[in-house]
Image (cartoon, rainbow, N blue to C red; front, side, top):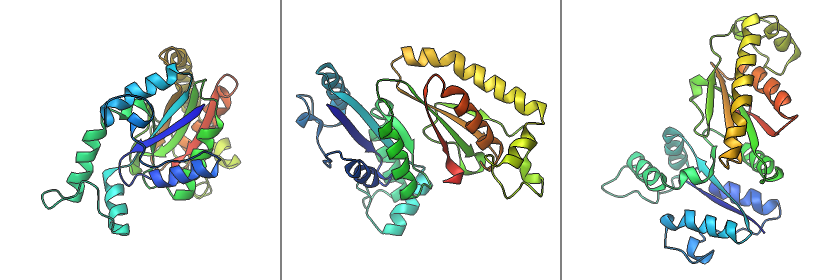
Length: 258
């Protein structure tokens, strides 16, 4: 039996994710208390025990935790004019968001974290489809490019900063392209520092992946960041994905190209 649990902060896209699972053929239930899954304590403290007991009973359980930056959540609640579940006369919206985040802090490490900040609903649905497609019994390596000027992804396990490399953005003929374009690839592959950066990241991740696998990790997110997330990080993420897909399940995302 395959069971996918969805959790996370309010406004992070749980309704979109639930609908995406339902569209993929899953039976979806909203706000299901852990005691209805197994006999366990009420509320969030019982979630870890529930997951463990279901696994022992032969269920394949995955917990997807959705998160987003505070300013993104504030914008979403303001635009939809929805009331945050923990808002009150004594608590501002930002305080309500931080209060809920603190309540969920103990269960966040139990899940596979997706950062939905500034992510369109269509892109989140695409990410969910990718997530469903992988074999949960094997380690999945997610390689994600991003731009530091938009913030570090909340779901990153390892972060590599490649802003020290020459930037194609300052080449007039390359500025409007991205790191998947042949002209940008050709430009970056002429630079020795790019090759050295790729080699260092590859060897670091490659040497530590077996240890993450032995630690019963089934999802590892490696984030590669440049300034805008358009050229250098995209190129390196694509190249690393091709190298690792020979041995691992690999997903690649380009946050700023979504």
